[in-house]
Length: 572
Image (cartoon, rainbow, N blue to C red; front, side, top):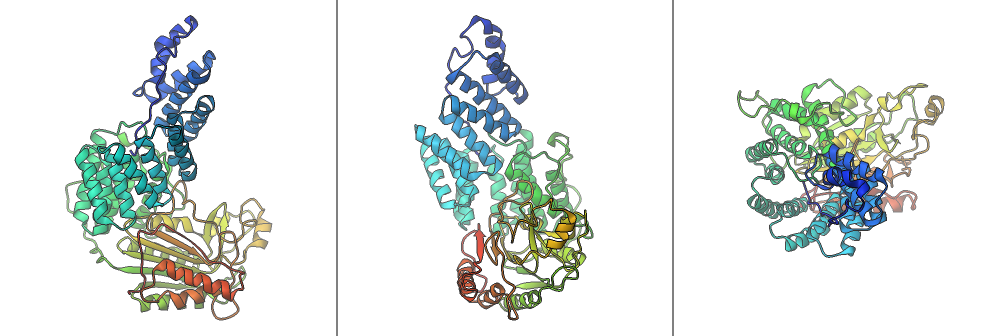
């Protein structure tokens, strides 16, 4: 989907070095080292050649490389990495480093991927393909300026690289340059009108511009192209194009208020087998969105789906036919919405005096600057689930969505949970079933055309030490203080583009509830959040400085951002 393969220069006589391997030379060799060989046959042939134990050095490295290609076709990135690593050990090459880096990229390990692409470039000669691939990894890290610089190098090396123009456009969109993004993606479409991927990315731009009919038209054409001629690039993760196409068209239908078609699209997304991090992120979003559109009484799903159907067997979502069911008109662009929850009156764990005051203060500050605010105080699990569902449903049509929570929060196995006031853990009970999964909320907001801001004053002392002791210390809740950094969302998703998440203190640290009417963090936040003309990250810098000063360096607020340009909560 994103990149071409850098092929090794195979030795012409690689499998003809000894009469004893004549059969391998005549049958196994071509199956192992031909790019168009089906994945299973390629893996089997390469494995049999390796089992002969007659090759060494560069020749054996070549065979491991091609077996890694076979694993890559199947989307088994752990085995890609294992074989590529063995190829590098035997004979370092640009191709092996590039292939391994691409596998790390598809697993979402962007730092390691960049290191591999750096090593590939050091081996030389300069390669536009590797610059392109490294640009992808920089984009995965949300370092869009470095991504654009690498795509510039890729385009300089190959001015007809449709994917490099496409991905440079995606990066420009991430920086808020919609017109520049549209120009690049239009160029990608001109260079190769048969590619579905640029059309999918143009779908997102049309949604960002509010032109939902064009978004749906581009999404429909992309899906048609992907079905008529599935991508043959062996570096494209299996099924990733269809998953992306259905997800983006579903989001466009939902934004337009055509919920029946949106449900069909999300169901189609979930019915396809995903292998790479990006596809799993799309499916995590689709699962939450489908839940919100299907059954308002159902709990929000926690985990990414377990697909059971291959795309060839999927019933195609309806693209033409009966008119959609009546639905609410989409909200006008510029709508800003906030979900504010303050939980302090806990029945079975340590009560907190300030969250209700904190929530009310922040809610007032946001209303004063024009936010539509949903406010909940001391919510039990059922009420917290319903309020969260309603907000995520409505936020699909907002330009800015802000979530603020004050109260108890914990991390379990690296995932963050918010604690309703009726939580009561019993020995042997599943602790997470009584709480609200923060990853689910983030997945429901994971959409690159909206600004999402999540603010958590929930890193207070672990309220469950006694319950954990009685239930058995088999989870990470007791040893892990504070909340976890947002490195992942469920199975494979990442912090979405256009998202900022702020914690009252650093990951793994404990924040203070405060001795006054408000916590130190929320007191500072409510003072600065409504400052006119103050960019949101500058606002958080002021909050951080005030909290550090008021707590005498005991608490340092922390944030992580992939925002698309500058964001102002209060107008200049």
